[in-house]
Every structure is written in structure tokens, then in C-alpha cells.
Length: 280
Length: 217
Figure (spheres, rainbow over the protein chains, first blue to last red):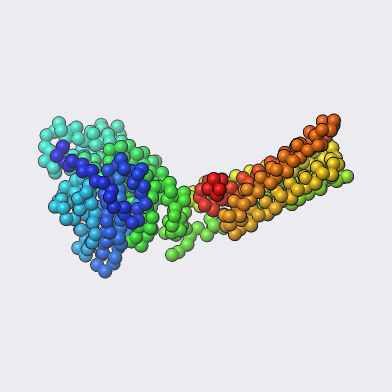
């Protein structure tokens, strides 16, 4: 598994993106994981993302908020090149992951998606046992030895805070679990290949409040070892869990700042109106 | 851009109206405070003390409304600042009401006749009254400079307080009288402090920052 993790490259923040007001003095001890520079994306003629300049640091939870259709999911999917699955998509600009342009540095899509895991809105376990769901990624990467797989499965399920709930029924079908448990299995599945970043696209929108709380608590644990970028429609969730928040509107980043600034005293009237529920 | 939460906006306007109503009630009573102190009839002082319960009820209603809005509307940013500040402003206004009631209590105990002292009380009352009027104007017109001016003007009331408490009247042998004069001066001085505090809350509503005196010096 060690080879799955590439050596971390320290990237100095020598260019301040135009729409990210991060104070580099405060963050200088944190490495940059993702940095987009004038990133643009079109779906055919639709200019869905316009000059996105954002920086994400490691061990931060970054929330991306904005009304439906503002481009937040598109942006997050661009970070592990999932937007390429749509044939009419065209991009310009750069997205750097650990200093390398994800589009032009020779990094394979497979490697990128191994290092940048993703959890979706609706829990999507495979129609397999709990064990096989979590072991799927490591097996794809060539790990066959049962003892190593057992270790990876247990470690991933523990990290996803679901080990105690499923340890006695690892061979049961994952579909038999509750929605909240299924989502944590999906998080465990993402963790099993030891990613550096976890992208979450509205991971709790289909869950009940208790399951939502469990995922939010889990995120606080995971941020010690991973960087998290979460798209959410839930303003209170963004305020509760994230360190940084970026507000997208009509394909632009209107404002990106520390979460307490965005929710207490944002600079832009549109951000204020959105977080206070006055439009969206 | 479709704008939502009109009902919430109406509720916020209603909360502001409740605070303004409480402020106007305090302003009305403040204008009579020194008048009552020199009135021959003690009945008016008694009525003013009793009427303090109305101010307390108005403050309680503002608190209840604010808590309800926080619970049901999950406000953030300027909405949350406004609601929290309304609670604090209502508390300051209620304390102003208490101090006016305390001045009326003094009249129930004694009638102060020293002209110079009464003139100084009247000056303090007038200064406080003007500060309260200007706080209302500064809120309506979002006038940050006026808020700063009001906050600074509290020093004028403090200066008159010092004049009273260091005046010749304290050389009189009637300790009860001088004690009541000192108390009255203190009540009026505290009213000034509360109005200053209200101005600082309004500054916070409008800027999102706590008022720092040094920023304006």
C-alpha cells in the first residue's frame, strides 16, 4: 500500500489567487493540496465555471456552498477529473494537485482518483458484502493476501467509525445497512486506498439527523489525516464542520474565506443574502 | 434573483419596532425624571416607580421574540447580529427604566431644593435625552460617525457628575440629603453609560465589529 501514497511535495504559495482571501501568514505551515488557477469549464456552450482561483490546504475541511446550478459539484468533480466523463466538457486553466497540473503533468486518472477519493450524495455501496465493498479498491490495486486485506478493511471501517456496528457481520450484504451506515461504508471504501483528499458531494443530504451528526463527527476525525472538500446545501452544516468556505454563484467564486467570516460578517452582499437564506 | 424569507424579514422589522417602542417609552420617562424630583406632588413619583413593570414586560417580550427567531429561523451574519444586539439593547433600556424609577424613589424619600444641583441634574438629563434621540437617528440613517460622537458624549455627563459630587453641597451637615443627591447623580450618570452601550451595540449591528474607541482616535 505504501506505493499508493506518493511523496508529498511542498508547494509554496507564491501566487495569491484573486478570489481566495486566505491569509498566507496564518496558513504557511500547511501544505497546499489543490490550487486552481483561472480554471474555466464549458458544457458545450454553457460556461459553467469561470476563472476559478481557489486554494485548498491539507488537514482543512473546505466547504463549497451555492445555489443549485452554480457549478459547485462540477468544480469538485473536476478535482478528480470526473467531469471528463461528460463528452461535451471543455476546460481551460489549471488545477494543481500537490503542485502538478492534473490535466497535463502525466499523472494518470487512475492515480489521481486513488489519491483523491470521492463520496457521493446517495450512498452507493456495491451489491456485495461489507467486507468486499471495502476490500474492492485494494484488490484492484493488486493486494491479494487475506491477512493484509483483513487489516485494511478493519482499519478503514474503524476510521469511518462503523467497525463496532458491522464487525460481526462483515459478510452481510451492504444493502442491508441503514442509509447512514451505507454512507460510512462508502467512506470506508474511499479510505481503503489511502487517499490524500476526500471529496464529498452532499454526503448527508439523503440521511436522517443522527446519521448526519455521525458523518459530521467522522469528518472532524478524518481531517487529522486527510483534506476534505465538501459540497453542501446545508448552511448550518458548512458552518459547523468546515474551516474554510467558498461561495459559488453562477459559475463564479463570489467569496472564499474562513468559515466564521463567511457566516458572521461576509464581505459580499450576495454571500450575506445566500447564507442568511434570502435567495437560492 | 428571487428573494425569499419575507416573513422572517417582517419578523426582524417587528423586533426592531419593539426595541424602538421601548426606547421611546424610556425617552418619555427620562424627560420627566428631574421634573418629578422637584414636583410638590409625590404621587407622580409613586406612579413612575409602579410603571417600571411595563418596561420590564416590554424587555421580556423582546427577549422572547428574539429567542423564538433564533430557534425557528437559524439566523446568521447580520440577522444574528441584529437579534443578539436587540436582546442587549433591550437590557440596557430596561436598566435605564430602573434608573429612572430609582430617581423617582429618591423623590419619595426627599425633595431636593438646591437650585444649582437641580440645574446640574437637568443638564445631565438633557444630555442623556439628546444622546438617546441621536442613537435612534444613527440607527435609522446607519450613521457610524454619529454613533462614535454619541459614545464620546457620555464624557459630558460624567463631567457634570463630577461637578455635582465635588460641589459645596457635600459640605452640608445633612448626610441624608447629600446621600440622596449622590445617588441621583449616579443614576443619571448610569443612564448615560447605558445609552453609550446601546450606541456600541448599534455599531456592532452595522459594522460586524465590536466598537473600539482607539480606532477613532
